[in-house]
Image (tube, rainbow, N blue to C red; front, side):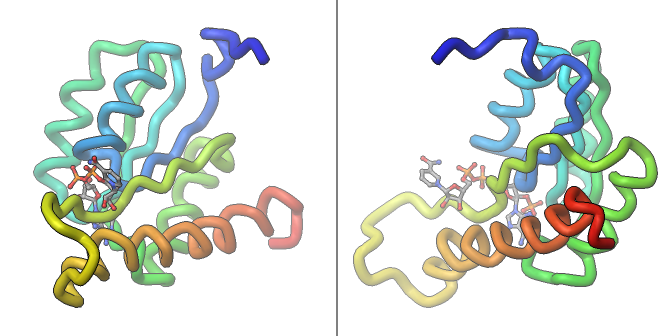
Amino acid sequence: MTVSLKSFQDRVVLITGGSSGIGLALARNLAAQGAHLWLLARRKDTLNEAMEQLKVFPGGCQVISADVSDWTQVQKAVSRIEKEAGLPDLVINSAGVSHPGYVLYPPRRVFWESLGIPATAQPSMRCAVSPMRLGLK
Ligand SMILES: NC(=O)c1ccc[n+]([C@@H]2O[C@H](COP(=O)([O-])OP(=O)(O)OC[C@H]3O[C@@H](n4cnc5c(N)ncnc54)[C@H](OP(=O)(O)O)[C@@H]3O)[C@@H](O)[C@H]2O)c1
């Protein structure tokens, strides 16, 4: 399969956890391809730093402070994006916390932040975006 480097031009892309780590690395890559990015994470200061870094790219970047484990905040965030930019063409779920180290029997908090949050965010984002995409909302 060939993926065109232009394939993300003007696409609306929502990246949860886009202010840091894997999410931010993907954001840089997609921004360089002309995607219009929405970065979602909890802390406003790191979101604003990420947005500042992505200013140099043409597609534009906006940020939303929200917690992916809070359904009301997820719905509110997706509604805002829909209103201001249209529904996302792509959602990347990268929110979660990286805890380096041995992972077989982690403390509950570590387990929740690194696996529970991503596992919750995926269906929440899907439930928030898909019905709108299908015209059911
Ligand atoms: N790095 C790796 O090698 C690796 C490998 C496999 C899997 N993973 C998993 O991939 C995920 C991301 O890893 P990373 O290295 O990119 O981590 P990271 O650098 O710590 O970035 C995590 C991002 O998620 C956001 N976030 C965390 N909890 C959130 C929540 N409840 N709601 C909204 N945003 C939230 C953080 O911002 P705020 O804190 O401001 O919300 C930040 O933007 C983690 O779940 C990690 O376990 C990482």
